[in-house]
Image 1 (cartoon, rainbow, N blue to C red):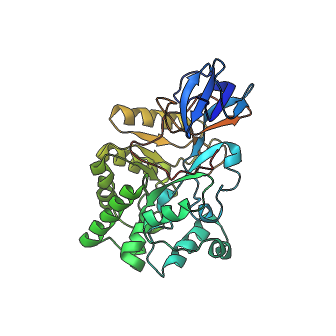
Image 2: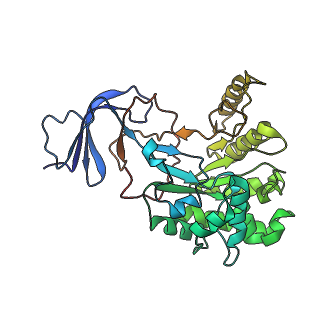
Image 3: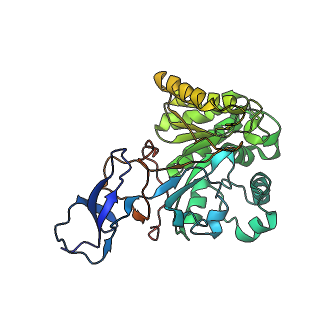
Length: 344
């Protein structure tokens, strides 16, 4: 039997954290079925990857591509940079779920936060969906790169509470409705839940922490998903990481927080963060931070996908230069991203 694709003579970096090794990679029916020496095996198509790296596609876990992914199947140059998956829905900021007739609020939110001209968003995004599942289905109709989404705290507050989302605490029935939305979205394929510390300045920052813990409990009950916590609140990075740690401790789910880095004013800040992460791990929490940045801003690092085996439905690609050893595993259990048959 001839393989569909044989990638030969490459330097394999498999995402497990193990050292790179020389091997051939065989692909059949869209899945990697063998890693090793092909020993003359036949293939319908052969790629000589000599002098290149063969690795799983990179995952960018902080993009805010929610609107762009609708009109741009490849999300700009991300695919050319080796990314085959992007995650959207960070910082509580989303464009689903959305009630019919209320789409302009979500687009204005993105325009203000991401400095994208509102006319551009209106021209590129025709909001035909309501639920998170509907949004994923809309993305799946025109895909060139895989997209996964988080459920945004500001978005579900707006959906349930309307204008009051930016003004007050949720009533018990409203809180229950938000929990139901999170549960439904997770079943429909969302990867987790994003929020922000109190007083951040958007609907996610309005409620006390009791609401965050209540909404987060859904992921704990389901036993799947990841949390992401925005920066930009009055308490700075300490407030952000405190929320991330508490979410992880209460639910047993991984949590990511945005790191505000000031290497000039506080050059040893990285030591504090590593110590904080170690303390959290020792206490049973699972929190991760984004990579520090050389300028004073929130950083979004590309997280390489982890796997225990290449013998699974993973996509392959050739990178023209060496890639450092893989970062820690970042793929949550039982979660899925919408796939594209055209992604490299």
